[in-house]
Length: 161
Image 1 (cartoon, rainbow, N blue to C red):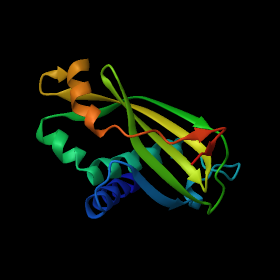
Image 2: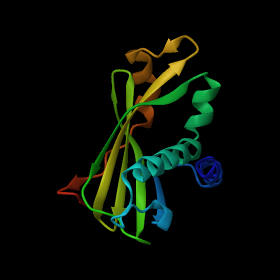
Image 3: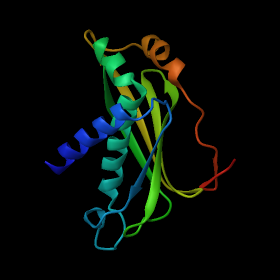
Image 4: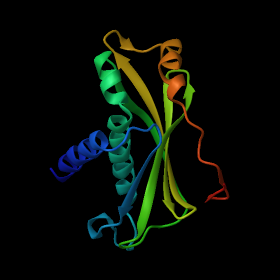
């Protein structure tokens, strides 16, 4: 039930904030997000990335556009790479952006940032299902190429200007 409420809040925030294809959300680590080692639990990162992606979809207007075409973006694959831990009450930002297309997949990256340091990166591949099934690679390329953004410039897990 809590995650459902968090999804509703993400949708509302996405609808109420100015539209952008690159989305940043500031957050603070809550006690319920910690494991016995007093850092963010691994499953929490995936959940936060999902909430930020949902907020990004509504904020950018892509959700309404794709759904009006009968398209449903689904997570086909997700990879989390951890570099540094996030401890209790730490302030951080999640940067969400679409960065590439690969055949049938849109690649979306989430970077969990504290200042200019990357703590975790979540790479997600979205698959598009339409009224006639999974979209072809050509249809996906045509659909997502206009929204692609430059990936964050990261070297040695640090943002580079």
